Amino acid sequence: MTSSSTVPVFLSMPSVPRIRRSPAEIAAAVPVVGGRKVLLAAPRGYCAGVDRAVIAVEKALEHYGAPVYVRKQIVHNLHVVSTLEERGAIFVEETDEVPEGALVVFSAHGVSPAVVASAETRGLRTIDATCPLVTKVHREAVRFAKEDYEILLIGHEGHEEVEGTYGEAPEHIQIVNNPEEADTIVVQNPDKLIWLSQTTLSVDETMETVRRLRSRFPNLQDPPSDDICYATSNRQNAIKEIAPSADLVIVVGSSNSSNSVRLVEVALEYGAKASYRVDYANEVDESWFEGVATVGVTSGASVPEVLVRDVLSLLADYGFADVQEITVAEEDILFSLPKEIRAKLKEAGDDSRGLGGRGSRAK
Ligand code: SF4
Image (cartoon, rainbow, N blue to C red; front, side, top):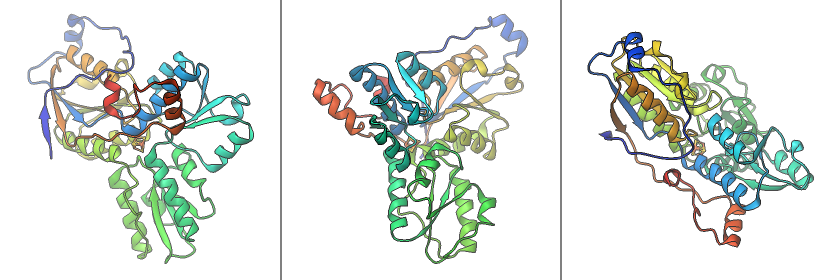
C-alpha cells in the first residue's frame, strides 16, 4: 500500500558543509519555474543490519577505547566510514593487518570461515557485526552443502558478502553473476540443485536469472525463504512507485553500495527520465535540473539520513521545496547487537542501546 505524508525529521551523523550559491546565481543558472516538487521515498536509508553494525563499532570505541580495527568497511558508505575513522576506528582489508591480540570487528557483509580462523590464529579479539540476514544465507549454504546439494549463488563475484557466503562451502557453490550466465552455467547434478542469493540484488533481475536457470534445470529448488532482504526489497518498491512520475531520481549512496547502485538501475527501468547516485549533496550537478519538474529522492540501506537532508536542502535552493513522502512500507525490524557488545554493555551497566534498528539512529 502506498501513502504520502509530510516529512519527518531524522538526525544521525554530522552534516557535510557545502558551498551554497546565492539565489541570484541559481536563478541565472537554472530558472525556477512553478510546480517543482520532490517525491521522497520511504523506506530509505539505514536498515536494521547497518544500524546494528554501526552501533557495534560506536559501542566498541566507547567501551574498549580506540583504536578499534574493522575488517573492510563496516558498511558501504563513505560518510559512515570517515566519521568512524575520526572517532578512532581503523579500517583494514584483512586481519593480518591487525596487531596480534587487538580487537577487530567483522563488517555487516559477513566473513568466510577462513577469515574467522585467521583471526583466531593471530589471537585477535573479535566482534561479529555480520547482519543476521546475511548469516541466514550462510546457514542455508552450510545446510544444503551438508545435504550434498549443488548451490547456485546468485550474486556479484568479488562483493564481500558473496565472498563470505561462498567461503562457507566452496566445493558446493557456483556464483551466477547475471541472467546471461544462467544460460551457460554447467552443473553436475541438475536434480539436486538449489539457488541462494546475495541480499542486496535487484529483485527483478534475480527473478529473471532464476527463470532462466529453471528453464534449463526444472528441478531447481528455491531457498527456504527470500534471501534478498526486506530492506533491499522495500527500497526498490518505493522507487518503483516514484520513478514513473519522476524526471530525475537522485539516489544517495556510495559507489560500492550494491543496493544503492541497484536503486539507480531500478529507477531508470521503471520510467525515471534520468537517475544519478551521489555520496554528498555537493556532487549534485545543477545541469540535471534543466527542464525538470519532479525529482525523486531515495537512499541506500547504508546511508545516514543527514545526507538525504543535505540533498533536500540543496533541492530547496533550486526551487524544489515541496517535499512529499511516498511510503510503501513501514519498517520496525530491530536486531540485537552482537553478543560480544551485549556482554560488554552489561558489564559496564550501559543499557542505552541494547538493540539496533533504524529508529535508534534518530536518538
Ligand atoms: S541491506 Fe539487508 S542484509 Fe544488508 S545489512 Fe541491511 S538488512 Fe542486512
